[in-house]
Image (cartoon, rainbow, N blue to C red):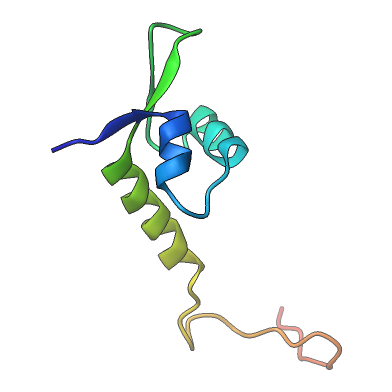
Amino acid sequence: MARMVTIEKAVEQTPGITFHELYTGLRSGKYPGFRAGGPRGRWIVDLDMLEARIKELMEQNVKVEGSQEVIQYGKLRKIQG
């Protein structure tokens, strides 16, 4: 069952996210949500979808060893090209 709440309640129930981050993320499409009541309406957020999106973003930040070259700053390295 969907847990639909306002942006204020979503911030209270989702640890680690601020009002500003969630609001700007909703406006840019980073987080799922919609405005009820037209362009000046209230933001409505499905908590299950929000938590799934945050988990997806966290997994993207995890770096898998061997998938990318690790850049060590301050050391000489070969430039390919």
